[in-house]
Length: 331
Image (cartoon, rainbow, N blue to C red):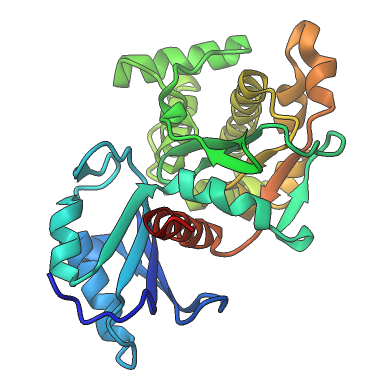
């Protein structure tokens, strides 16, 4: 089909989560993304309509020729059905409907992983460990609407991102209290994945389970309210919820670091942890990250970083698009 595009600019990039869809545009080679907007997924019946709404809001924007979207879902083949939202679509049909010459769709945490080498010192905060080692694997984990997991491994002169669904590994208990909570979650969900506890909905589920075990009546709170009450020390139920959340995240992140040998660092993204500030730094995260018996000293040398950059997955989507277009032209 003809798109009317004489080159590959402007380029549309997107980061599509279970709650928000973020978009930006790259106008010319070497220019930074501009025209950032965040749309609520629930306000649109599908991704096509969300993209069209963004383009309508940016009325001075010429129609993009190519696009890349990171999406919170496995991307296997043409049909995408989101795990934590009700959107589904054909990648090829979306490309046609948007009049694009090229559309790249990849997992959002694969896109986020691609952004990690470009982070500036001010865009990450270190939580323990030593210095990252050049060329060694990098791990990435991040609780948000779900639990994203990815990483980078050395490939030639650069890195290749990992594409998997590590957020759905089985969650293991490290304390008797956690075993009690996982038992409650198992009665509710059956399989208790890491995502069942380490996500926004997971925070709510943990809070419900803690109140249930304590004989307290149910109290409907959103994840951000649980975090806010915990950080303000205004609610013991919420405080325990967030402390257990951080400890469990440390254990799962430590498992990931061991699996990958992640001496390039372990990065923590997603929508929850970067907002916790000093609470996270003082939590059990780092102690539990290193608490692996004979391999505690091994993990003690691995640095962890909280990602502070505002739109890193968009930059990763831009990198994925660069790579795809370079592959097509042989450059």
